[in-house]
Image (cartoon, rainbow, N blue to C red; front, side):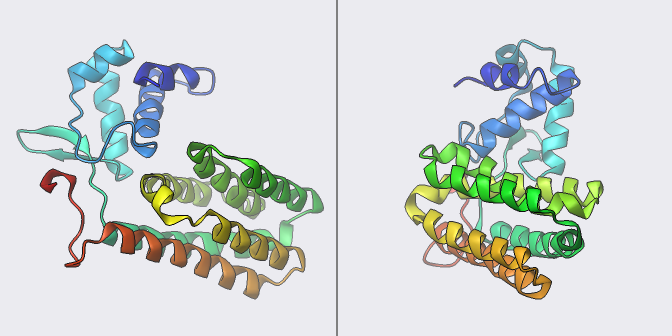
Length: 232
């Protein structure tokens, strides 16, 4: 799939050209189409996406704020490197945000919300395309968090999910973690259905932290330093 295809696929839902460009570049980074350390030259991106350089520049700055792009003096923009410390920090942020969201949501969860969450888990069980796992994983979590009625909190969570999904997709094939993740999802859902807020949030925190530990172990070389694709 090319960059333009990613942008065209979002054309109906995004509201502006910078939105479309940001979506295409974000998906390219998260799915690994644009590898860690790869230069992101504005003129080349503008040509590939059939837009001017202005929306490309704005989109790159948005992705910089999301932690997916870095700017270097005299070298311009490039895809941010993956490292163990980043995975751990994102997980710490996720725990703080998502535990709060679930605490606020549980009193408002309906039978329909719980059925929807269960349906997403069944989709995950049947899905063989790893590229879809991140999307379905976000759907499951957001189904449980949306009843919190805190849109700004959910926006912050979405950003962290996107950053974490990028790490997850890069190493998922080597981790064989999907079955364990699904088991943890079902335990969280069962605790929400009881409802047992303390158990649900405890399970959620451990679910996020366990995934981060696996990622960090995979990304960290034997000597313990972070992985920088430019050095390989």
